[in-house]
Length: 444
Image (cartoon, rainbow, N blue to C red; front, side):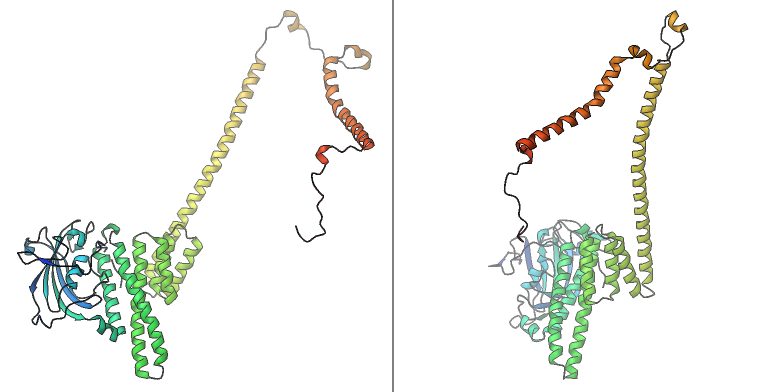
């Protein structure tokens, strides 16, 4: 069920060109000179051969070669794609446009040769097979054999059966593309398209089966058949949803991967693949919390078998390593910020200390003194009421003025209030500019 390449070009192709012209050497021009088709082996009974129509289900074999021009001998080129017994729904973009166009204009039991410009094949993308990788912008050639055709009308008559066939083929084609056409992510869109298309059809089928189960409740044989189809459809749907999750993981779209895993678990809460991929996506998603990751891993561990426990333990080890690294980094950042703050303080203290030492040094430097001053001992100032005339009145007066100011201002403010009260004057800053608010009403 698990997968792995990427995509072909999504060049739009007209499913029914207005006219097909034929070149002198037998090639039919489907898209001018860029897409040519030639019948190698027509059907045995051409008159009664089934012509393929839109939405027919077709069983096809094909072999693909790199071919720079239609005249190139494909036997001398390396095979880049080989497929057998593949069901293709015409018009659903199951295969690259060159293949789909050729199938659309073929007949049952017919073998065709198709040459295509790169724009109707893989374009800038690539495809690998064993040790060979088809280069980007390669023109290609296909040899195609139409084995069986199921017309759309017949599909509708046995809808459940053919829907399961078509959706399983889409899943297998997407699996193959995941492995061989990823091309650095260029094939992602086509792979997702195939899985999502299959999942949507399977959801519709399951809804239809639920209704049929109610109708066939009294018929044991009918109920058994519907139950088997429902089980098969559920398995395919879970595979497709799980693989969508894997594609998003590979593309490093971790939030989208978690969303896809949620869809799996909505259908099957005990699905181990859904749980383990949800845990991986949560672990790698920067928006996830460690509590979320821990809960996801624990849920996966509860549903893991003995063979699957190794995957869970590996994820737990990775989780613990990441959490420990995060905590260590956080501690280092905190310590760095703390040291930076302490360093600034120490620097300021050192600067202050240096300044203090410089000032102290300056104070200690001897000043030239007169012989009398050097020999005279210092006399302390004597303050007594008996010698008040010798006090330093200029210094005392300045301090006395500063101390008296608060008392003077208090006295002046008190006088001003008394005068205002006597005259009834209210200062402007205390006057209201509008009516006083009333709180009697419930309205605010």
